[in-house]
Amino acid sequence: MSELKKVIITGHHTEENIKRFQSIPGCEIVFTEKISDVPEEAFADTEFFVGMITKEILPKMPKLRFVQLFSAGANGYTWLPEEITLANAYGAYGDTIAEHMLTTTLMAVKRMPEYVKNQQDQKWELLHDISLFEGLKVLSVGMGAIGTSYARKANALGAICYGVRRTIHDQPEFVQKLVIPEGMDELLPEMDIVALSMPGTDEVGGMFDERRLRLMKKTAIIANVGRGNAIVTEDLIKVMNEGHLKAACLDVMTPEPLPQGHPLWTTPRVYLTPHISGGFRAGVNYERVIDTAIKNLTLVAQGEPPIHAVNRELGY
Picture (cartoon, rainbow, N blue to C red):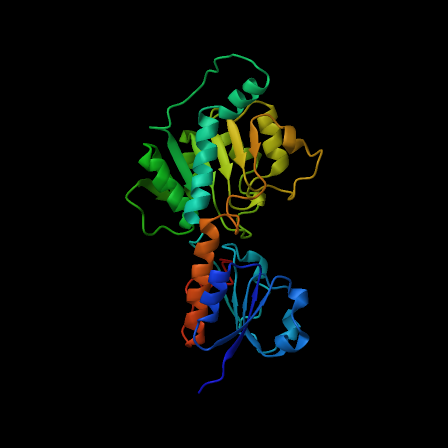
């Protein structure tokens, strides 16, 4: 009989999912909510790790060869040695983050935050500049699981969708045109909604600076659920204060957490949520992530490669 593979799984989990993890053949599992609670001797033989690993504990696990993240983003873990296979939870968050982005962009199109404010002020006022979502031009910048799901949902409501991805391949039928990032500037002046869902790679940082924000229509909406540094915060504040862009719907921003007193809190027509669109604990997200983790642990315990292994050069 082959020796059991030692596994550390972090976080708080339901009893049902603990049993599912424990039923994986060939694995001996240590569950811990806090990594500091793990006995030192447990680290020594650990081969697989599930959760948020840190540089500090890596030297304690000389036998480690596989790390499964609960997150879809993996750019913060590229410091792991190449001999350790890294997998993310790609796909587990796509639909729910896309729904969040659809909610916030529809909210901005219909000027709902302003109507909520009017209700609080007991102010009866008809607001103008209300668009019909059907027929709007939507650019999904990033066509992974999130961006593709958003474009699909927007198209189902009648929007005309375009996409930006690193390389041109697999153009969905609901997307009118795909371009690489270098071709994005030609599309921006035509778009009514620009939805960002890019991973945190070096190329993404500062992608939407003042120049690109001003390429967009004055009446356009920008939404970001990918990485906060994709939009230059100071430039966004400047153009919004000048009345350029109808709205900015941000679930991610720079800095995070956004400190009290930061001008982004009170910038007009900027709608903020605290990086919650892909919350690991948010209902279906949790179950989908656990499904991915269990599938991958089962595969690697059998000597098979995991799904969604991270490309260290790309960062996702």
